[in-house]
Image 1 (tube, rainbow, N blue to C red):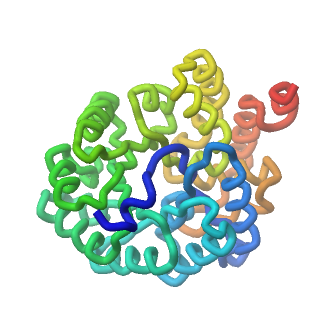
Image 2: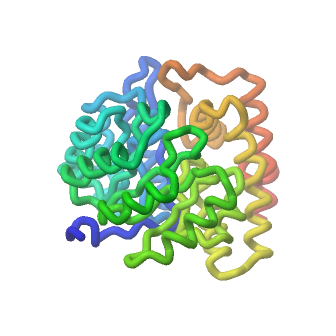
Length: 319
């Protein structure tokens, strides 16, 4: 294992940052810096992810992604480790992004499966893809595990081959969306030598996921409710089920609102939530996403209030 891979262990609470835009859809650097400061100030946050789904990375150019990393490094000054997404349809571009991330000072990579895998994949394709990335960068890798039904998820035998062949893979971000398979991932990867961590991204059923033994979570919802996530994770770690259930009940209306259909609007909704909370001035999103309908923003406001984050609920929680 390289020195770079050894210096960061993917565990704990890792929010995936949103990326604010101006009305002309350019990156709002000042708003992004403020958002990063908000996340880094949350007790229990162990790293921050950038250039991922939550930051609408599919709509960002290579140079914009490089700039996002540069802003984050400059703003946070190494106080919080940075996980940089590697989101590309081709392996050559993925390797280019991985190299850029290491040169730009990232601490780890979050590697997305390439879109062509939606047409199916085999283990040799997955191995070739990950080896190119690992050859380009010695940073520790968090492998994004998609649902198997998407065909972008790695079947367990393939996943184990990847972990054996690419030792810089130190964790998976598990979105298999299958409770039994999720538990199998945790048991199997924890039994490896060296152990491979499992980070949950099952925000819609986060408490059951964490209780199964996850080493942490990596979630876009953390862009809004990182404090609740961190408190929930600590409660689970100390086996305080009563407190964990209380926190999970608070989070439930918010996650229900964020992850409603259409699922693609999840981060759109999170931006609107930050506007309602006074932590972002405007919720501009890049096409093909469009502004949410007023009635949906009303539902998000109600969910934030029900969670005690807005209005009278917030006052009750503080009391």
